[in-house]
Length: 233
Length: 331
Image (cartoon, rainbow over all chains, first blue to last red):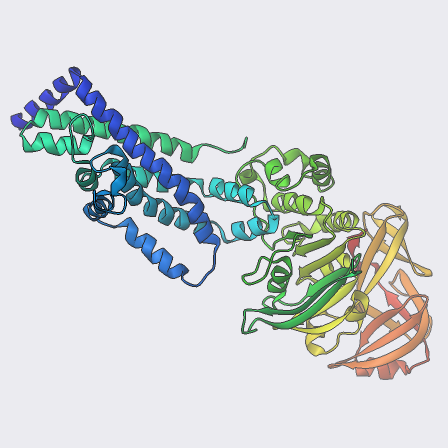
């Protein structure tokens, strides 16, 4: 027991000597995960609205693909993106191997099915009268989408929170496409792996505390948004 | 522009198991009610016309009140103004429907009746030439129905109205033309008074009862009793409608007393003289129609008819108790 307490103590003292390297790791973690979540939201929510409203042949296949995507192993996604950006791959000329851009691409791929799948579920779960009323209103497409998202807000925000949760805690994919290069592509999760393998448990715990704090702050904000009353909108 | 809205071959779903090739048309200032029991396909028909049913295409020229109006999160005012570009007119419509003071409340705090009124105000305050209403009085209290029908009639004047209801009173109060549906088919069409007085068959009669629908105008009122001018005569009616207001009255044919000579003492406030114009079998009963001071139909048993010794062309007096006259709408 004293071992664990010692490690925790080391962790907090490590945090006390908050240095430039840790700051870089935190900034990159936030940059990659938030950018991927934002891109996935911007692409995913409109796609989900279209999917929820559309009735076309093959919709079942698309929804199955989305649901499979929600559970795809991150290392597979990482391998796929690595092959895409590898020197002799289709995007090889862009020179993206072991860069934050490649990390953002793979995290967007991981976040997108979650945003789409959970948003479709949220919109489909509205009261049966809501969509008939929405159709009856004959609004412009943009206004209709806005109203739908506001109405299904709690579910849509849960979708975004779940997507962020997946990418910020994910390690396999960013390790494969980013390479965990110190000062360049090292994020909190890959740094924790690194420190643990070298038995520097105090540093690993410190990074874990930061990761947990980010998770609490971001999800707390999203939870607040879920309850925010739209009476004035 | 054509002077009618015409809808041909309305079918749902593709195999026609709910509705199969219904044809419908509504004049540009006509009020048509689709009437029938639950499950007849009325709402599906209206959704096909509105373009909200799967496989139908949306119409830009209609305002549509769904069967269960849904208010979105936010204030009642936000809901009232959705897609409306004349806030003053919308608020005025909410005012005549009695919900102006609830507009700044969250929609979640409104009662069912208030939600219905906000939704009605939004639908009625526009300029769309075609107004589609699914059970427009659905959540409205019985005591407020006459006044709400008055507002609906006023705000849809000069426009085409297609409404759906399973209630005879609502149909009589709001429509001129009645289309009776049963199990996905149209079983009768005609003016509302003609359908209610002469149901095409026993199944329609069972749905509508046999009723006389009369249009009149209040000439004076003392307390709850009003004198209502109907055609060339006057009826005493219980209503709170003010003098000069038009009213729609319903008289159940089975509650009319029939006399072969002027009744000397009767409990009826309304006794009318006329001539028997027709005697038609209605299941176990006989329907006796009278033309005269007022046109009415009454239901009698064969025994009663024999005792009265009535035949077509004979003089007849119809007595109607004030309590048997329902005011189903105020214009």
